[in-house]
Amino acid sequence: MKQTQTIKLAMRAIGMNKMRAFLMMLGVIIGITTLTVIVSVGKGASAKVMKTVQNFGANAVVVFAGGGKVMGPPDEKVNTLTMEDAQAIMQEIKGIRSMDTALIRVSRTVKYEENNTNTAIYGGTVNYGDAWEWSTESGDYFTEEDVASMARVAVVGKTVVNELYGSTDPIGTNIKIENVNFKVIGVLAPRGTSPMGMDMDSRVVIPYTTASRRVFNTPYISLIRMAAVDPNQIEKMESDIAALLKERHHIQAGFPEDYRVRGASSVSKMAKGMMGTLNLFLGLVSLISLVVGGIVVMNIMLISVGERVNEIGLRRAVGARKNDIRNQFLIESSLITLMGGVIGVLVGLVVSILLPILSKGKMPAMLSWEPFVLGFIFSVLVGILAGLHPAKKAAEMDPVIALKG
Amino acid sequence: MIDLKDITKTYRKSGGMEVKVLQGVSLKIEKGEYVAIMAPSGMGKSTLMNIIGCLDKPSTGEYRLDGIEVDKMDDDSLSSVRNKKIGFVFQSFHLLPRTTALENVQLPLIYSTDELDMNALASTALEEVGLGDRVNYVPSELSGGQQQRVAIARSLVNDPSILLADEPTGNLDTASSTEVMSIFDKLHKDGRTIVMVTHSDEIAQRASRIIRMRDGKIVSDERRAA
Image (cartoon, rainbow over all chains, first blue to last red; front, top):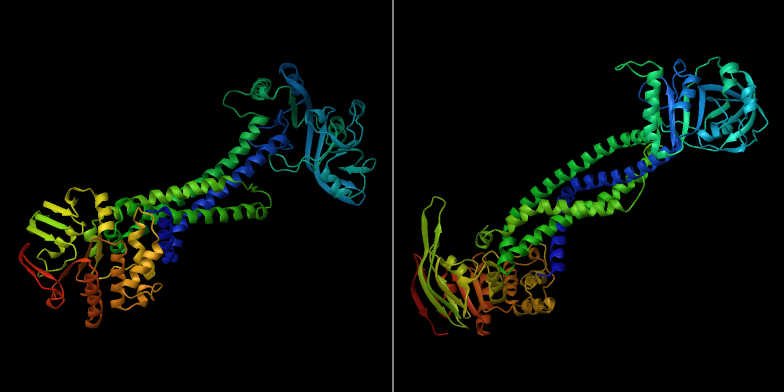
């Protein structure tokens, strides 16, 4: 039998009962839509993870004061990390290219003339630029003399500039941090979002000494940031630093640590873990929809075979072989699921376009060709698997009995 | 052309009881004959028709169709024999709904392995039954007699060796019956071989040979002058 004829026959059979065909497609549509969204969101998410790791610093290792599992700057009341810890790490741990120690306070008021904004104050060392691999967009970082003399100089982030200055050049102007006057000497290059989703450009960097004695009055530091010579050594450095601090802070086995060590690899693991949960959930939705959709297709095909017993008998009488009948029903079920698949991919792409807009960027998605291939394979597969039993039943029918039915 | 030798057919009922529907039927039908098979219901005439039409296989006995031993063929080969040599006409027409007369008539051709001009063949067959102006009508737009004529056109389209008609007027009123029977008369005159099952004497009188069956056996075989 001619294949074009088989397809034409199947199209007609589908066209004869459009509502039924749509119901048969529904599960496949949902399944393939979800599958498409998984792929798009997955791609968007892994791009975001890459960006996050890059923002964090691909060869960075950071020690935060205070324990716990999360990322981000520590609570202000945590007084566990000292400059001595930083010096010990510098001496004991190999492979550190550069180290910056910092005293951080989040959400402090910064004023310029009549404007003010809330931002993070970052008391750092002259190694700030090197350790963060972060250059200035205009102006410069402070110098060793500035640190030694507790100079009141500040390097401001892009967001701060936007909120305080608008289009005015901030270099050379005076700002007030916690009512202390600072002179702006540089602007940081824009950096984007941190792994925790914080705006890294909302910060003002001042000398550590000034922050410690003139502004916040504390000898403790919030974090130590290091750039590794070799990114492949980061995991080893993380565990070595953790071991060293455990010993220095006299943490007994079984007691919680009062510091956190994070490297690029653990950051990417964490970011991927968050996406992984979402993907697992969507994957299950897709799988269940496809299985349920397949069962629906099989049931309706069985009903259809039952209704078309006469037709099957007639076709057999005029010369259709068992295989012709089997193929007719198989092609019919796979055509229906394929149509469902095509609709699913299209709906999925629309959802993938809308998701980032509706979630305001929290759910990134990337359009790609993979959903088309996956949608084709999975929808046809469901159609064939669901059609096998009904098609076999139709093909094995005794033509004599089928003609009477 | 049709050569049945000592054909039996035994069915096993669900209770395990065996029912002998045909009990040794021997029959020869030559090319161009118009044969009516008559029997009361359940006396084996439909089974005999199904065996002649290669839809069913005999339990024992030999069946040669155009010299080919069809009783030994597998299912696919029998499908091919039905496609090339047999034309079926059924009591209930068996037309595909929402499908035009032309496409209904083409149905046997799509299962043929030969390269055929399906539209031309189907149109010719429809003209032969006097429905040349109804090619694009669907069954629901046609009268019972017209529907049966479409079915006859379908049985002719592959130029079969025999036409097998099972109570072709059973679902028709008198006027439509006459209309359909006159088509068979014409086909007989054109030299077609026709085997028809009926229990109407009036219909059987049109045939050139009447075979009567009872209890799975042929009880009389009467040739008549045309």
